[in-house]
Image (tube, rainbow, N blue to C red):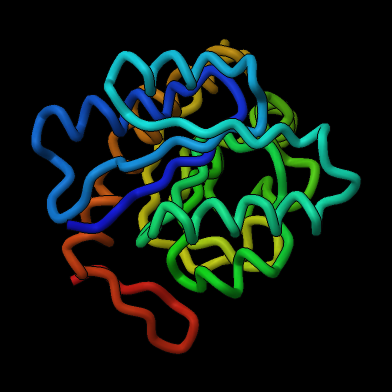
Length: 207
């Protein structure tokens, strides 16, 4: 049984999707063993508590820079014996000391179809604002591995939604979360834990 550590910073809706999927028996071969938050006030910590999952707070503001903070995260992941790390609304880009130690073992969800509307500065509502400004007819979310570059790791799964003429950044965000993120993130986690993802030439293939 693989240990899944989930990193959070805010409300934890993607964490809740993982907890619900786990409760339904949809995550095979793994369990959420720990939730690590960069923010002591994150509601995600309440979700973990209600689910009986161990949580650890490592406040970002207590560290002078990204590297020392990332080293603290790495130390905790090692202590928790993490087999898989899931970034679920984790608002900090980790230093390569973490991404190299957990190569192809960190999964993130990005609320757009990579390589569109991604990279540094593209997070939260800004992603949907840019997609609507561009006039896209479909959008969606991407589940991908994390490497040292923002949103540049191997793609595991993608899903789409149609963009309506009257969509706002807020309605598009909700549509993508409910129809893509909350479904595909638990699926990707289960695929990893079942050993059904293989890497070849830097690309991820699902068996």
